Image (cartoon, rainbow, N blue to C red):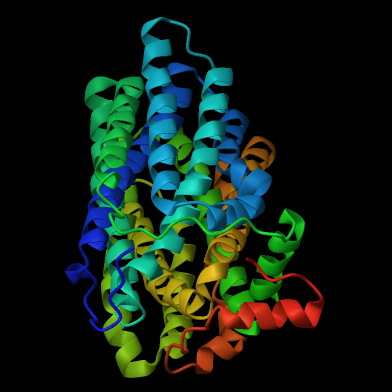
Amino acid sequence: MQTDTRSDSPWRVRDFRTLFTATALSQLGTNVGYVAVPLVAVAALDASPGQVGALAALSTLAFLLIGLPAGAWVDRMRHRRVLIAADLVRAALNVSIPLAWWLDALTLGHLYAVVLLTGCATVFFDVGSQSTLPQLVGSQALVSANAAVVSLQAVSNIAGRGAGGGLVQLLTAPVAVLFTALAHLASALRLTAVGGRQAPPPAPRRTRLRAQIAEGLRHVLGNAELRALALTATLTNLGVQIVNTVLPILFVRELGLSAGALGLFWAAGGLGLLLGARCARPLAARLGHGRTHALTGVLLAPAALLVPLIGPGPWLWAAGLGWVLSMAKIGTANVLGVSLRQRMTPDVLLGRMNATFRFMLTGALAVGAALAGLLGELMGVGVTLWAGSVVLAASFLPVLLSPVRTRRDLPARQPDSAVAGEAARTGEEAPA
């Protein structure tokens, strides 16, 4: 892979530009599907709140099932091949939804299977992408590269979810899912241009898979800063997922609003994510990385308590403002938190570190979706919305109470030799 440690601009690295455009296509398709798939269940299959919650839970359950071993597997494989294969699988799975609908054979069971298997492919794509990035751009450009990627995710939220709502309204939800499939296919084709000078796969490892997984868990949970980052991000995802799971039901059934209005509400959150990501680097340069992370949590996270006030007229705007501010906090935290954890991790552990984070973060999405469905069935949509918003509002506390809040600069990158030293102290074989 290309690596440029002398420049602080990732845009000078051709492979980064290629990865960025491929990710843009993939993110656009994912966000259209984010709106379209639950609306297929609600509008085409008359799904209940519990069934919508189960659908959302299955979309992230894969991270609980294979998230940790996926990190060890990704550390053994060429990352480009992992990304391409994941996109092709997601394209094939998503195209089956409109095909089944056209044949009048679409069922909730089909949707459940598609979102579960798509989630498995996403496990490998996410872990592989975050593990590839530091190797492509080098340490000097890492924060800029992460800011660009988080900004891309935000723009994709705006464009993809806004377009998703419009496509559902104009063409029906199943047809909108076809766009998701085509976007993943285009991403896979673009990724074929990455890694012309990619390093060969590492030599076979003598360490057992279980020991490698444990090594990644120790690296994250045994470090006070990494542990705090993981806990804050986990609480954030839990709260966000509870809220997002019930929003389609709230908008379409209880408030009588259109799918386009739901897409615009989610797109507004994407705008907040973009603003937070773009502000992260200049704020960190002025205030320090850790202090910026902590202060944005204190100042912005409580705005989530405005979201349950959603209703007709001005209350919809108030809830939208709360959502935008909450997402701005997440955008800043994503840039700073991801950069910090990448710099604190040797290359040989990147896959397992990212998999451990994704296991916790996306596991929280699965738990949040299931919890939202259960609370929605037992206590109603309003109570569920309050529960998710309270969790989101308090999500900054682990970072605030940890050493992260005092960190001024990013640490020096850890060498791979640190892993060998740790393995020696614990009596395990180091990765080959």
